[in-house]
Length: 114
Image 1 (cartoon, rainbow, N blue to C red):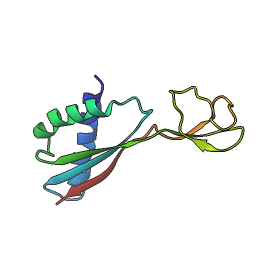
Image 2 (image 1 turned 180 degrees about the vertical axis):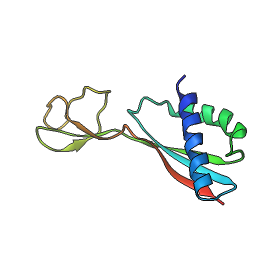
Image 3 (image 1 turned 90 degrees about the vertical axis):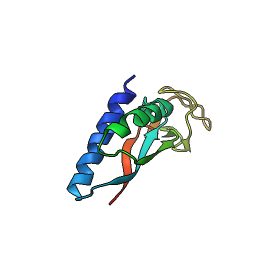
Image 4 (image 1 turned 45 degrees about the horizontal axis):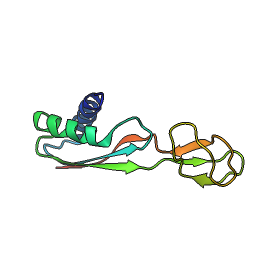
């Protein structure tokens, strides 16, 4: 399960940012995960629950925001939410494909520290 590696990398980034800000405590961590990022939010939640107590963010709460996939049709230029993975059909003009505009995110978006 690669979510443990992602959790560890996120906590390393949290520790580095907290240290850079001169913080001694991490209160809250907010991550944003796209629907097509390849990350299972529940597995990541479990990995963070296991990893946080052993990290410099011990005691911190965390939140995972999920971002739905959005695409722009290259034919009719309308935005839509793809219903399947990487190959999808525009619901407006039935053209195949399009350009993903969101849904592959994997970001640390906010820290609450002191």
